[in-house]
Image 1 (tube, rainbow, N blue to C red):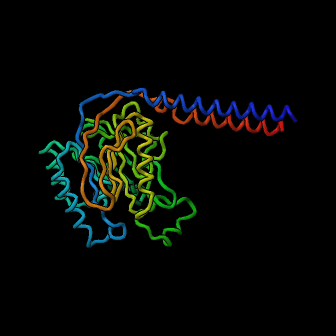
Image 2: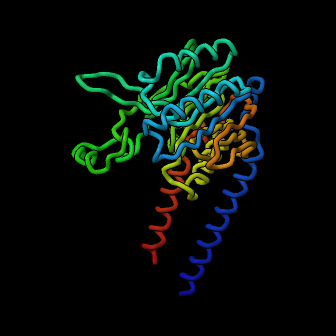
Image 3: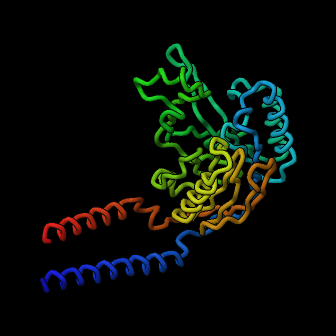
Length: 319
């Protein structure tokens, strides 16, 4: 009995020591500057249209939305102007030709790069493939688009055998096609941006795939689905974690919030109030270099969990 108690005490001491070692290692790592500036600051305007989800796709709201976003684009004093996920309520190829042309001319005249969330479609095999995309205007030089690769089941695509749900849910644009698993960063304003659409920024391992090329990260999202809940703040915290993990700035443009700029330490340096229409301008710093997480991904965490489970299983058997 005494031996069992001594073994239990030793186990607790070893566990406490291991936990303290992890905390100490994390504290030291957090104070090391793993990445460095690789260019001068670039101004980014992050737009927030605040269009209610239940009104977004209505015909009577479409024209007003297009005009409001164009007005914000034209008045934005920034090198890069970002619109949120599916900001303009129409397929990219169905936007009025003069509307797109006016944006292209403005970009060329002012030197701006306009980056916007949109829906692309391509005709294949007798039907359309739809993509939740981010595109750059003008589209000259470097990668100019990104297509969402991590789709949400029953929200953005319907798994095989469940197509009948489309008739029940009646959610517009609920059967997208995933973009390629590997895509280069999107280039805008002379900065290579790793892109995450909506909750893609929850998956740190996926954003790491843009490195070391990406100099900053961009998230466009539409969290209006969740209303006035804590989901938007949780999503912001996910973006903060990705910035800290990669040592890169993360900028976010959302429909209703939280639109914000986050530095390489995960600190929010500028943000817009939720459920308001407007924009926030921030100067982001392109960065290069690799953090420990960027080099290893989730592998160390998986190894630690496997070892911990193995030790617990061994102790349970001895008892």
